[in-house]
Length: 146
Length: 281
Image 1 (tube, one colour):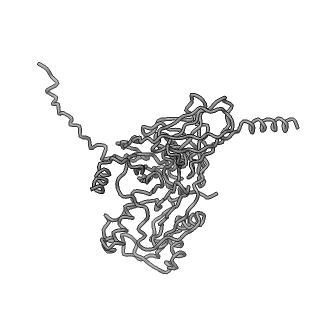
Image 2 (cartoon, chains in turn brown, blue):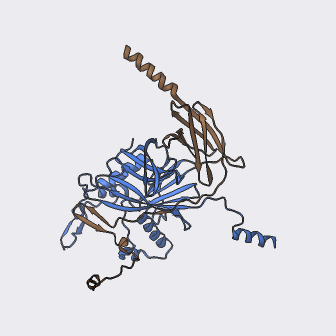
Image 3 (tube, helix red, strand yellow):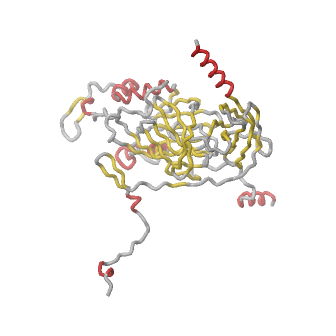
């Protein structure tokens, strides 16, 4: 019976700590913006507590659990400047207006691993050996002076 | 004159375009098709085309090449005879799937062509339940955060980056606040790694050529059952789907003049025991 009461108290505590932030994201023309990412963080941390992505109507809803006094909302998406906003830790509606900003996404090409091993087989990636660096030939005699 | 000036402004880029550009991501998959022999490794490259931040198209590079060849045959630019006789037109893939994600509808449509005369497709809501962890790392040059989910009998770890704010990734995976840079099941039997990402101005294949037959619509469960039938006993599966019986047919054994029953001529496929989708629900 005691364990049951403790469990009930813990559950009540957990439930009370759970909260939800909802809202709408619009652009400078007050048009709703879909596919915007919203992440929720505790102050000065990069750890994501919870996240949401806006729907066709620009709406989002983030359920989270935290005991911090305040939290940081980070709002970002393609074609818009990233926005951050500190909010109190409570259920509330947070509507934000984003400014359009074209950001060139970082392009990346990862180099192949030149030699890989699979069991007792070594595989060579020919492309990685196609370098354009000219290595000067040095004869053994040039290493001797005088 | 005004019209000429308008088009001149357009050409000069005076009026900025509000349509987001297209992007292309290339993933390398390293997989173990035989769970009893992890020395057997299959590598394959996959392409994810992201169109105007509205939809995406994902397939094996070889599958797309195969589709291009089918398109040439369909348009009469390549004969069926040339296709059969020339090895250069054959492209092997273990993933005969073409996956379309609709960001607005939040749907994933999978087109599957295991047997070309019986292609199928199914559409599902993208409802992966992700748990984001506190783990962070730099992968492929991007700062990434780890997230965990379950799909088709496997637990997956995905590393995504907010630096690319596109909620997508390899295969049917996506729905995170950033592009997936690396995705692996916890046994590392299937590992997708981002190898290239950049803007793309080429033509995007938005639908398969379907040279022989249009796809039938199935449920994911039914498609899974049919795929498993083919994997476990290809001959019986094809017989069931097409009504053609191979039981009384004899073929020449490879490398000899001896005729053997069709089934005996088939190569051993017991190594194919570890599909990406192990079970549904």
